[in-house]
Amino acid sequence: MSKPGDKNSLSNNTIFAIYEDKTGIIWVGTSGGGLNRLNPRTGNIKSYTTKDGLPNNVIYGILEDDAGHLWISSNLGLSKFYKLAEQFVNYDVKDGIQSNEFNLGACYKDNDGIFYFGGMNGYNEFDPLKIIHNPNPPVVVITNFRKFNDVQHHEYFNDDTIELNYDDNYFSFEISALDYTNPAKNQYKYRLDNIDKDWVFTEAGNRLAEYKRVRPGTYTFKANGSNNDGVWNKEGVSLMVVVHPPWWESWSFRILAIMLVIAAFWYLNFRRARKIRRKQEVQEKMLEIEKQLFDLEQKTLRLQMNPHFIFNSLNSIQSYIINHNAELAVVYLSKFSQLMRLILANSGSKFIVLKEELRSLNYYLELEKLRFDNKFDFNISVDKDIDDEFMAIPTMIIQPYVENAIIHGLLNKEGKGMIDIRFVLHRETIRCTVTDNGIGREKAMQLSRNSGIIKKSQGMMITKSRLEILNKQYGEEFSVEVFDPKDEKGNSLGTEVKLVIHYIED
Image 1: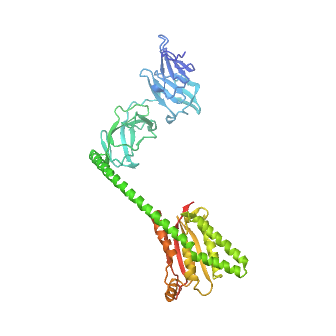
Image 2: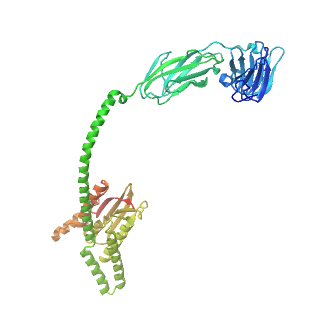
Image 3: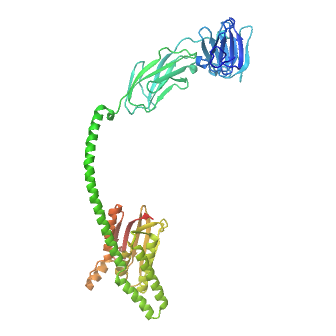
């Protein structure tokens, strides 16, 4: 009976096989406890398990051949047990047995000494005395050495040294045991000192010892192999592997690095004081830029609310009333009041959503169109990729160029004029184009000189200055370009203004 903690008891209470050999020793095969040797004269019991060389601890059958050796069927192959040497030699499907799993009690020895063992795929018949043990240990060699899976065309022998650079830290060894009796059953083990904590055991199908990201240092690689019957080479093969450190891990570099760190620490403290002073200077400059931008915005607001425009608008309303055109007067007054409300509401914001800017432009253009008796038409188009409810641009940035197009380009034109305003999305900016079919800048300047009044557009000059200051804040993402398109004969087709405007998500 099995007693936990008692070495002189059966290893398991479930018994699958019992056999008494020629010397009177009783052998007990268990389910999960391996093989037990019971001496009826002394009562001593000894257990043999996978730790002692058994392939599996489930024993199905036991037979003794004429030479006194035991043959044991299990759940993982067939084993020959040398009783005196207490050594197992294991056989599996690579040796020709029907399968690795045998059946309970399916074993028989006939009068001629022939063995029969039955399993999951039939049975095996053999003469155990003709199964010769291979006692010769194989010669173990390194057949290939690879760096990053590239075979190095060099032979390495026992006690050789392999030197590698720090970046050659992906390498592998291919091991061979030179015994060809049944090479598929040869076994291997290997270890790289300071990397592998213990021996790594493997089979003939996987003879490659691979190592990745090996740190610089000196290592010893040891490998060994056995023949088909588990006889191991006593010495194996050994190689020295030296992975040289990179130059930046050398002591000379470390000393230099420490000196540089000390120098850098001193320099950083020196720079810190200077950085604080410069930060104060930058803050003062930023405050000055903010002040300049505020002043320019106020000037732009005053231009939009200039008395001349208000006076002319009110005169137009008065004219409609005097001429008994009350309906048109009410329309003009409504648009005028809406425009004034928008200008005043947006004057306190640096950025407004494009939708509000478009409303202001639309009211302004409709008022000017009414005031100048439909002297021109206008069109405003917005790219479908632009979300005018969430994309915000600086306030009062487009109106000065529209006003300049009306005053200097269209009022002096014979016939009806046209202003086309387009908004297109381009990466992180909005491209705005203001195009008119007026007389062009050259002719407008000539008319000004002829009249004796040369006056530059204050709105455009102030807007240009605002763009320059905004560029300092947003990294050169604002620009304006004004030119006159010409036909094939060189005649002006009007004026075109191209604005590149940085937008923010509101």
